[in-house]
Length: 227
Image (cartoon, rainbow, N blue to C red; front, side):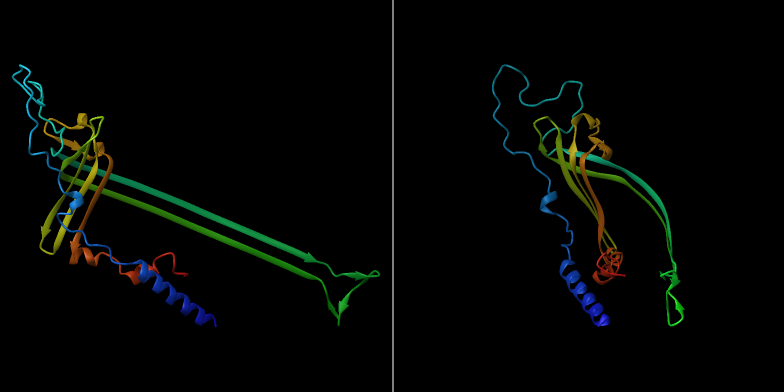
């Protein structure tokens, strides 16, 4: 019965994992979510006010920096993370119980000549040691466009870059919020200055597929596997 229960549990877990592990949509270029925003083609009519300049202009000695819908900003990827953790646990417990021979009217009580005294000794020991060390680094550049200008002047940017290689494609996607003050004169900003940043770097094709575990392997390495 125990083997049957184990087989039923494993089969049920495989079915649930297969249902939950539906293949995710493969990323494709020209995703509408990352499509650039374009400014309005029709300029507002100029209001005659006697000035030589009309509309939004920069100062005579100022740089032309991105500040409007559809403007282009280059984000310099300077992401580097490092995390390490270690833990050690050592537990022990010993139990000793002595039961003397019971007496009745001052005489030791026995059963068929055997003493009824007993000694119980028990002990448990647990020792555990765990270490984790993870490091990630991402460098490069990606050019994005301004898709929205917030009331306080901050810029919401979004964009993607695809590279087609021999055995597949690699892509970088980025979304976030940028302060105009952090944009350099060359319309560049460090990724560490992007608020609410979402940076995605991955690939498609045969090389990327071989680095992903199958759903059955994920089941045996997941929390549903009882062993």
